[in-house]
Length: 281
Image 1 (cartoon, rainbow, N blue to C red):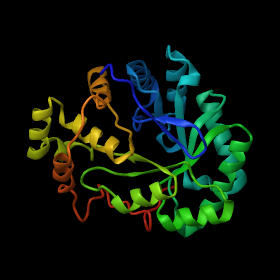
Image 2: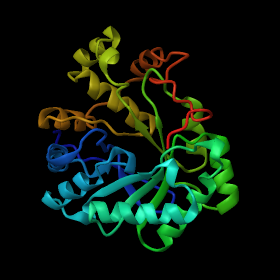
Image 3: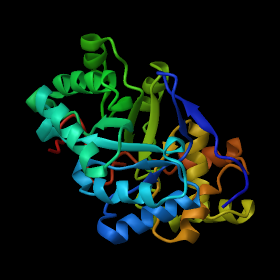
């Protein structure tokens, strides 16, 4: 891990998040808890989970095993669409706390808008209520398009602090990112390395990394940082975890950024999960 401190980004509610987080999808059970614990010890203080990952218990166990004080961590979970009715949403969030055995979440998100069932406004009202009850410090959404965000803001008067979206060099989401920024919403990037396989083999990124003395993942994660997003990479080994944190001691030039911008593809989504039509419950 680099000795360079990890910067923070201020949210629209006055709280702060580290400029990189750790994804926990498919990190379950005792092995998952150990991997998450290692990530915390490696320097990740923003940890991303979800009800649908079925690992909130492992996450809580990792937090308790960790030597890092709870107040220094930023723990996230997400509400699944099957629990978007108001009272059900509150009960599910409370169950998230019970499963994790945490007193509060730092960030709780709506996982998908699921527009066909028309319940995401109810769910958002529940998150606002949960924040008022002290169950969660900050609230936000995942995969919300501008029209979904406008509906939430118009109904509640509360702007999400975060919008977590699919974002990587194949799918840079410039329009959504600009919209989020214009409305004071911090963007988090899921699958920030584009599931890595193809990106890691890209000759232009390999050449860039060699010139900078950095790995291809470090180059991509630095690109996210310079865009103003918070990437959420996942890595099991301590070596890779620490490598992914070393992105704050170098800078990509305008030429570098232009090269990366040329990697975008028209059908950039990895699994065709367009929030206008894709739904997940």
